[in-house]
Image (tube, rainbow, N blue to C red; front, side, top):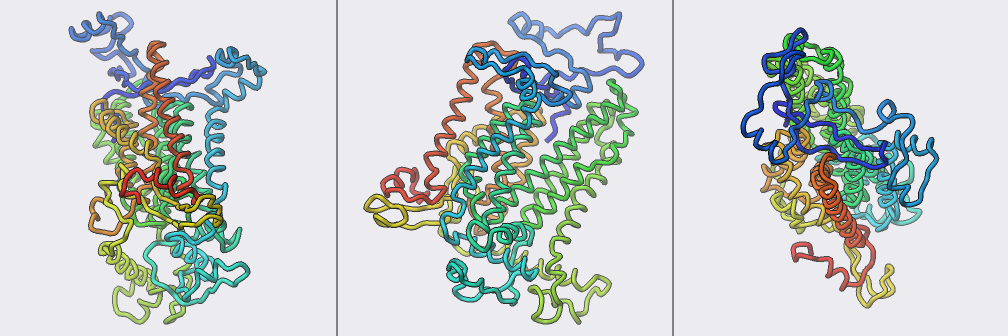
Amino acid sequence: MNGDTAAQTPTGTDHTAQGGVGVPVLTDQPSPAVPGPREPGPEQPGPDRPGPPRPAWLRGLVRHGYTPAPAVPLAERLVPPMPDGPGVTPDRVAPSPLLLRLGIALPDRLWSWLCRWAGWLGPLAVALFGGLLRFTGLGQPHAIIFDETYYAKDAYALWHGGYEISWPEGANEQIMTPGAAVPYQAVASYVVHPPVGKWIIGAGEQLFGMNPFGWRFSVALLGTLSILMVARIARRLFRSTLLGCVAGLLLAVDGLHFVLSRAALLDLIVMFWILAAFGFLLLDRDRTRARIAERLGGVADPALAGRLNLGWRPYRIAAGVCVGLTCATKWSGLYVAAAFGVLTVLWDVGARRLAGAGRPHLATLVRDVVPAFVSVVVVSVVVYITSWWGWFASSNAPGKGGWGRDWAVGRDGATWIPEGLRALWHYHSTVYEFHTHLSDPHTYQSNPWSWLVLGRPVSFFYESPKQGQSGCTASECAREVLGIGTPLLWWAGVVALVYCLWRWAARRDWRAGAVLCGLAAGYLPWFAYQQRTIFLFYAVAFVPFLVLAVTMMVGALIGPPGASRDRRVIGSAAAGLLVLLIMWNFLFFYPLYTGQAIPMEDWRRRMWFTSWI
């Protein structure tokens, strides 16, 4: 997943000073050998020696118009500069020619401030747009939809007793009755998902009550924050504020992300922690490479690069905390821990190789693997066990605490292990059996092979009101909340994934490898459980990485800053058209995402395939 073994991608600066925006150069620059600290290397031009002769095939390309990429300093290859911000954007930025042509003249100080903070203002604006979409009518449908029947009530029980309970018959109807008391009873229930996601859902219930808006509030908030996160992540990944905003906008108008942001289910929370972990690893990558560049002083040093201690890495520890919270929401986070642990180690290998280490794999094995294991795996285990504190704090008297809390009391075994941990281990063994053997048929189950093309979406809510009911203005209407991604975005994503595979395999682009790693961690493990009852909405865990892949393809469509004007105009028009079509597609399906009453004929027009019904 690391492309540092060959060419290193250049900066791709946004040309804010000229009033426009650029995109990252998506072709790799050559990564010439860097001389040692005392004298030029044998293949490197020195002060009194010319550069090495170009091979015949390269001279032929030059005669036909090819321009070799210039050498990039080691520090920039380790950490390409960000496109804008304090310390990057000059104090005074020239007015934008585009705005001037439109007759808009902003004061110099205001324009310079906007350019300096564009890296935050743009993503925040996109997140605000996505948040307005998600919070508008959040309490509708005013009903317990799909698996909210489990998680909304489990969340309430956790906040009131520390463990999940069994609810009496008719509890849903009583909860939805205005003014009725919540029928809480302290009888433990067997549940198969860890508690963190339910604690988060319950926080909204504590703030706004045991009602649809209350139990959806926290999930909608995380959905909105994830838009901001993906915009900032894409900006750092591609070194372009424009592409960062494009990524945030695409996530804001993805139907599956939108629907899961407005439902009290666990999968959007899983996605949030995966994305947060990925973002922290990106920050750790840049911070660590900046430290290496500082220690090297701008020149490769094989001896120093091999023995360099990369020091305290708080962002990687933060990533481990997020991985632990992922696992403590759903067990699918285990695969994320493995994938991200390998990813950060490979990034370290690439950094040491670029710094000049002769045996970067060995140096990484000796100096980086153990700290990475502790930061990602050990930290996540500690976070996971801690997340069960409510269950641990409950009574271990028979029938008085959480389910299985009393299992180890008076039971022979490894008595040197605390009885609470032994009981938790037993609990987890039963949960593992449940997950691996869950095969009850369900109307909306689907095979992961069909997920990327949206073969079988999930209906979270459906009713057929007649004229005059629930806002129906036709003789017959349909109200549905359909868990399906925005089709054009996902189908473009399939093409974008092929492009990323090519970028990673043929061009050794580390960014494409990082995107593919995140997607693989959330997607590929489900192929091992094809006999299990699984659903399309599990795929929301990798939607941000699908969006990042499409964003990378959009950057390729626009073209590098050095391309001809015609190439940029045509590419920008094609990229803009793609984004506009995706937004139109989201608006077309918007009634099906929000449960609006529409005429049955309009509903049928949106059922593009019989498998969507």
